[in-house]
Image (cartoon, rainbow, N blue to C red):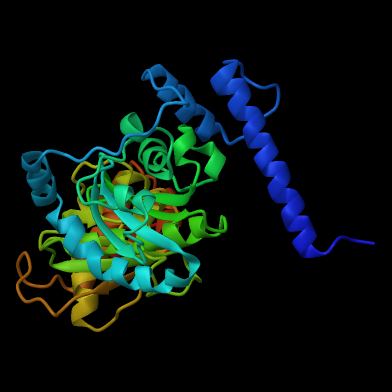
Length: 366
């Protein structure tokens, strides 16, 4: 006879807390590494960094505010992040109000720049961590979802006992980094509850909302054309799309993390031309908007293909007159042959056409 789900949940929670307590004793008191993993590897790494910084778990975490001058500079430097994220944060705060969790937005250094949700200012534990300008970096307050998300560059869920300092064990939190249009970390989003029911599923929510902020930051860039990307067969037009923003000459001015994961050329933050990403002349993207042909299948130079949905207003005289479709096709084939070092069969395979078509378009005999 199986146990009721509520009993199973309680048993799992107790086992989890026991494992965390054992890990804390071994790591932070005996300074030993357990034979088997009792907590996530990133928690262990954070604890080790805290110890290396001279922090002790029995100390009280201190939630320092930046100086007035430093705070003013920080808020000014993060105005785009704050203004772009605010409407998303307000909606998030309302949606989680009944869970007794609230949202914190920090910059890339872990300084609070905005908050949202049902924050009980009468509770000093809530008030301390939600003051604008509070330094919540790992160096100051030890292991938290904020510090680990910023350091590990990945979404995290942190159980109460996994915090480094004992006096922060009332907090349960989920965090996710927020990346800017240049691919660098711009800040992080945190969902925190105080003596609240632990909700590991909030890791999924905070990851989704962080992606919304990333997309909004990309679209806030000055651009002549926005291109949504997804794999063939997937629905287009959602927050799950990769997003590229282009200037009028085809240079990529911004990209979200999804696009950077789809396209290897965008893995860094350097400026890239879209022709180095797609195996088509960039004018085809602008022409697709002019012709209201909003969905294209584009080849990558890796041999894979993506769906592309260029979005923008009809642009006249972008980098000269619109290229004729025949000229664009010819240019595409020439570039593919050049990339294949003259191997027509390889170029044809990359483009998904026959060798005869390549020869015909180039005016050569097979």
